[in-house]
Image 1: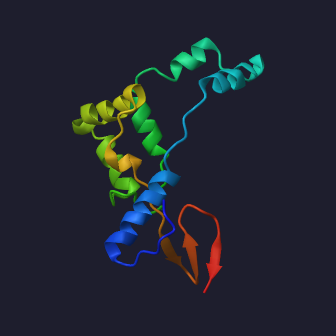
Image 2 (image 1 turned 90 degrees about the vertical axis):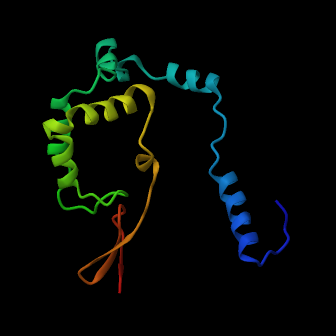
Amino acid sequence: MTKNLCTPKECMLDAAAIYYGTLYTPDTIDMNAVHELLDAVHESARLSTTASQSLLEPITFDDLCDAFSRAPTTSSPGMDGLPYQLVHLIVTNPACREIALATFNNALRHSDFPPSWLLESLRYTRKSHRFVFAGIQKHWLL
């Protein structure tokens, strides 16, 4: 990266892409340090073999119905613009059963996430006389 000033829009966009690409590129993981850290976890704080295996069992339709029955009903929609109530209806609809199960089980078993699940956004939401930064419990008075 250079310290040259760039003014054309394309140059600024390139500079921003390089800067943030470098900033948000994950560092390599020292697996020896990971194993050392995990080995230091006291036995009483670890999951049993049965409990840890149950975390990787395939997700069932009942699991989905249970999870989505507890989803918030008053929050803002996600990146796809669908409110939770609509997602609940879609995911728990027997006609969508197979694709919903395949989507969630692929995410669990193969880390195969739909692209929209990898996006993140923050937006300001006007509520009464304040702006609330969605996702953070901090208020700015007008």
